[in-house]
Amino acid sequence: MAITASHVLAIAGSDSSGGAGLSRDVEAIAAFGLRTAIAVTAVTVQTHQQVLTVEAMPPALVADQMRTALEANPIGAIKIGMLAAKGTIDAVASVLRAHANVPVVLDPVLAASSGGALLEPDAVAVLTHDLMPLCRLITPNLQELALLTGSRSVGSEEEVLRQGRILLDAGAPAVLVKGGHGSGKWSTDILLRPDSEPVRFEALRLNRQLRGTGCMLASAIAALLALDATVEESVRRAKQFVRDNISRAE
Image (cartoon, rainbow, N blue to C red; front, top):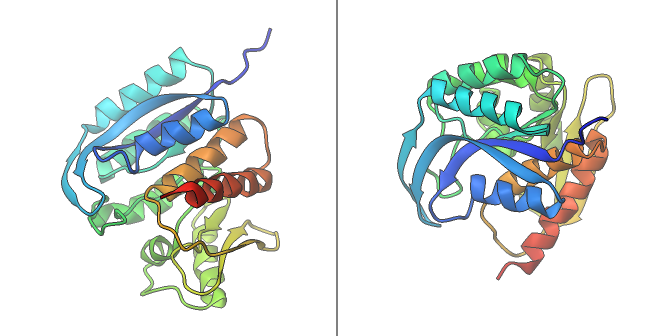
């Protein structure tokens, strides 16, 4: 009898404020009826306004957490958030190569909403070229997309598409560019895949702020992939989930 995948493995940092990272991952995954196994990549000391301390876990410890989580539970998908250091990226990639059948969603966390750096600058190239090709979907926001592609910023949609295709050319199988940090009445996310037309997800921009929405979105997508939804369906349903949470935020 086949074992139903009932867990998502969340690989990310802790957030002492509870506003982002693993706290949001567990919350989002549970909302879809699944359980969360975790691999802690870093311990952070944060408020909702600033990052005070970041203590990265040893890469071998991160890899060991992943291996035991995958051995102990029926893992249907993996969500990756904060990785902090180049060595951790290498360690995570080494484990993923041994579990190529498990879909992976990568939220490339480079900085906190409050501005604190959460990934070493020299690790960006390793993230792009060594880890992204092992993932099912990458979910950068506009600022992360610019940093990952060595660009100054993202302006027009034409520039968004150009930069997104750079990541596809680097080996990413699919890229969801999140438009939440943009401006204007409408917020547009764009799903890019090789040999496919871009798929746009448009919604009226909400006049509310909620930390950890990137964590929530990537975790919700991973949960839906674990439930055998397609990438496009997972993105659509996960976006509605996050939007509902923002609407309820005080």
